[in-house]
Length: 215
Ligand SMILES: [Zn+2]
Image (tube, rainbow, N blue to C red; front, top):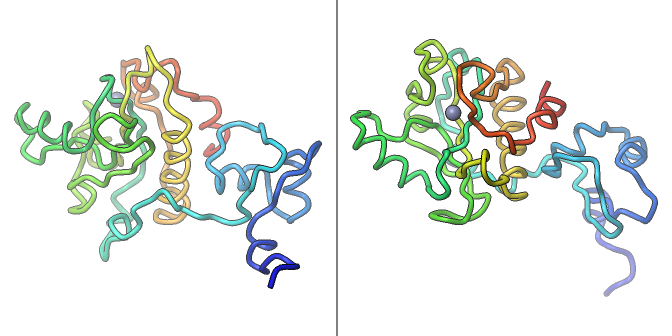
């Protein structure tokens, strides 16, 4: 055995050589810098020698069995809204209990929660009951946006701390999957503060890079 690498290794991944750029690699494979970033969870253009780049979507961090429901109400969801939790720690379970205690009958106000290593794993995507049952959210003040917006919450207070690389990579994958695959580009991405008077998701959230990636 040995010798040539398996075909799948040569066609599915590109190993970065010194001096290569994302735009050069994109040209090499007839794709775009934006797609390379989506497929690799990159929110910046920096790549390192010996880094392996995926050449097609992976969605490895996503719990696809829970995201791909038999009935997704694709007409209902027109917006994807990003939040931070505003707390240093948490998880879907922690926020579910908190929202129940606040009197929200459906509990967890978000559809998805992305952990930071406190009560769930760093970069872990958790699916909430409101996604599983295709219920409206409770994550914004506006009932219009709650009825038509998928709420995604990153655990952390990004006024004080930075989101982790794993959280951002998972968010890129989740938004790419929901927006471009599940909803076939019919939903628009927003930060909470684009819609309402709030700092959410905090000044350390890389807003410009996400706008570049998802338009
Ligand atoms: Zn928010």
